Length: 206
Image (cartoon, rainbow, N blue to C red):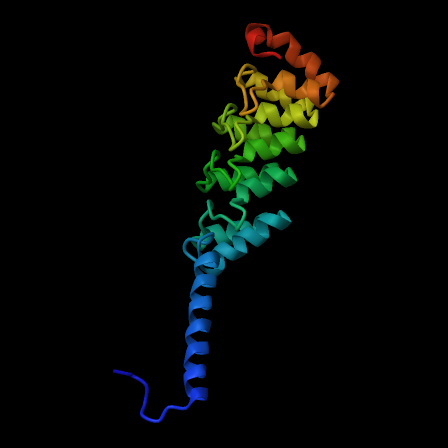
């Protein structure tokens, strides 16, 4: 039996169908938007926006009002990923003090240390390492932060990672150790550095 009012016109029926479709679309959009912000509130948004600008005062205000220091944006970036990307070392210290987890991963499996290594930002990489970041964490491709530094020829960060226990023998999903990555990318300085510490992984070199 129909639940529509007696004599309902085709236009009325069409309006109902459109309204239901709009509600369903809005709900789906909300789920996609809400997922990165748990819970969705102004302070999480303010924290994320302030982190992008490196505005420590606004970051502190948001944190003191209960913003989640580990809130994620649509790409999985946390405020600490942003600090790593922009080399905001003081911001990184503040976020970690307020509970930011140093090894959270973005949608590609990158930790903030991967980001710092890729960008060549030794200052923030040092903050992360001294706060317990894992120098051997793999991303979705099996790349460690040392692979990232080798890929981009970041000698300063590669040296720092080795000083903090990075393993030069870990292979990525292509079977390459960081030395091989450096060779393929013609990152000569990083290659020379890694060559000195990679003799024990000679069987992994191809």
